[in-house]
Image (cartoon, rainbow, N blue to C red; front, side, top):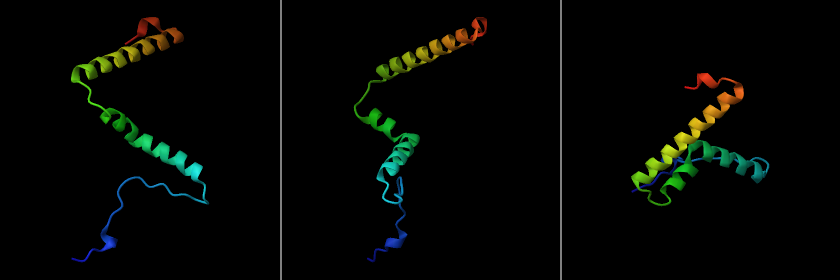
Length: 83
């Protein structure tokens, strides 16, 4: 069996380092990883969460979003147009 290295496709995230500027490359990597949602999936898979707890958390997030929307409308003076 011959194994050819040219056939290997690179999978994953790649960030190039220019002029040995590792700090800039790390900042870029963090942005890319966050945009891909890798941190979020790692946090979700860290431990098992019961479906009922997931529903409660999602409902709490929805209520918080709704309250923020109401607050933003009141700040703009549109109290009777909340939908």
